[in-house]
Image (cartoon, rainbow, N blue to C red; front, side):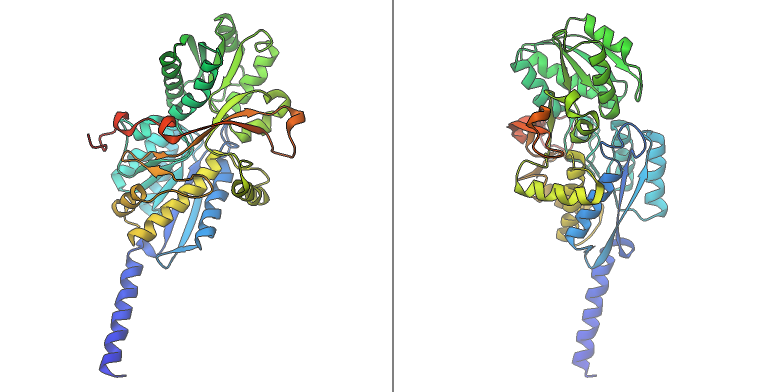
Length: 401
């Protein structure tokens, strides 16, 4: 072999080694950490893991020439369990990023740990605005929705329709408090009043005493600041008390396609809600929904589609950065636009909030549904600039004044 060929071969090997070294441990590893056995199992659950796998497959299975691996675990809605799993993943299993993170207490805890480790988290299941507010992180991102977007959507719609007095039935943890606060503020800013609230334990099965307080308040709207099975059970038991028949309205502040399916159109018809994704909105979303259905037996909600988008965006950022280093990827995530089946012209703000359109939806009557899972009418598109908090007003110290 000539000297010139040897030199070229050596340079090629050096370039190959350098590219390989830019992906730590010879692979990129993503962890999907969420509730897979509790009240939010349908909300995100194992189907979010499938959404992540779909994103990896659609990207080609590799980035920077190394394989992409996805693992998953059930955090049981407990922040301490989630933190222990996350620490183990980072310290011994070479996980580069953790996503989904249903439950706000979990999302905040894992984002704080990831900040220490300089690892990327992308929350698609947690709702609290604190993730991109006072507890923001240079490595933390919030994707599918948040409590402010839900308040603007559902809360705003009902106030405009005359629902100007509210009583809140609130899940007793960070997510519930944030959802109640955001919606209550929005109601008051638009001329409404909040007459009271009551808090219930996560995963309670008996809402009778809470519903009686809400009923006796005389509020025009009872805001359900909870999610998953908690919301479904509250709606079922509200029907037993004749709350809607008595003239009060129920506002399901975080209610997705998965919960409507579980509850059924007969019970859910007429509910107004807000999501960041609906599978039957256009041809592209319908195509994605049917692919997802083939793998999971259900249509995706905003958490599932948001997880797909988050994984895809993360891999694009690694490719653009030429590295899976947390600082380099964080910079690219903020720079790259988000255009995929979940978001059109989405943009990541300085505080890590991915700003995109949200959709105000109404649950169809049974005779309006044309096919299985055809549950929603799209009442309005809420521009991302209205749905999400102005980053400059978020309280995040990453936002330049």
